Length: 333
Image (cartoon, rainbow, N blue to C red; front, side):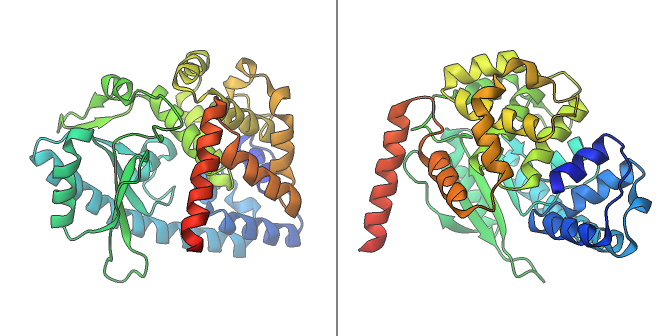
């Protein structure tokens, strides 16, 4: 129901649901943590008056909470960036409040709970030292083949810690051959601080698609991020080139599957211009699974498929199966 509702908003169609349907919608919206996105979309398209008052008030309440939360996170993010760049460490901000402002138009339009920055591997040791000096504790040490280390700090009045993730890549190196230097080379510096850089839109869209895949598109927020980027960039994304690059990076299956499911879920959104570059028949079953996630067996099969068989090379699948077996063995000891 939530995807049909979102598509109607984007297409500026009348919203005419029964009262009990709006309650179901609100439950789905809150479950998928997209209250602030939906509120801002309804406001943008002038549709707030079309939904029940209690639903409108609930969405606005969550939106205001997200605005406050994101302002605090933005302040912490700016402090982290300032500390890193003062030592000459170049950083690329990933997702977060910057993404909300750039693609949703407001800092409170998309919730975030952490600060993700991309740094170069040679700067990792110094960056860890700086983040720890700011009161963050190491949450986990780097795992073999992984691509980030996590830190946490409790903020006044919050029961959930603020997380900082220092990335040196955006994918695990043992299941891809993505060259992160391509992302650095195409990034652009901010005017006020050349050490703070932004991904170019092509790479940012690529990253957002892979981020959605990593979470198996299990919530509407991953669809919305992709749709919003297409809406704002309006055809400036070169999908054929991205697919060519993904073949070289061994991520083509992940990228194609993600884009195909998004398109098949929102078939009437014309600005999803990647539909013609992908063979959607190949991913009909994956789309069907996403539309029938309440069936326990289908959900289980989908998790197995996503965990082990969404890779371009069978050797990557074997690595994932081996990793899972080792984890199970260690956990049972």
